[in-house]
Image 1 (tube, rainbow, N blue to C red):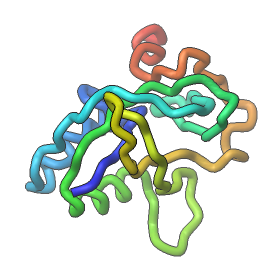
Image 2 (cartoon, rainbow, N blue to C red; image 1 turned 180 degrees about the vertical axis):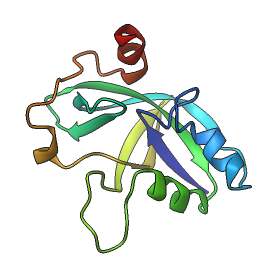
Image 3 (cartoon, rainbow, N blue to C red; image 1 turned 120 degrees about the vertical axis):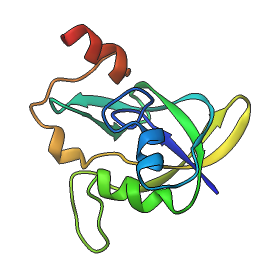
Image 4 (cartoon, rainbow, N blue to C red; image 1 turned 135 degrees about the horizontal axis):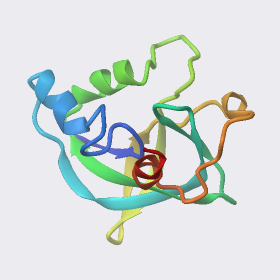
Length: 134
């Protein structure tokens, strides 16, 4: 088991809902540990957001889940993260405080250069932002 921080389309109810991703691969359901945030800048790529880590950025809202290790390859596929290839998203580890516990979490930020010219989501909350765009 490991922890993952999701901030965009992998959040519950979104198009790539992490629970649905696990179910479609016949894997154990992720366990929601709690809401959390990381410092960064969130950008609108149209159908999904991209997070650029930045200690001076806003608190980007997301959720931390405990997941089966085998779900990581499913998440990598969704985010198009492949060994030896440089893509838009990258798999990284970050320590996140969740309800007073510091947890090592996998997360998927984007390459910094990829956000040039894109609208920034000042609130740091993809779900709330997406709902206002309709």
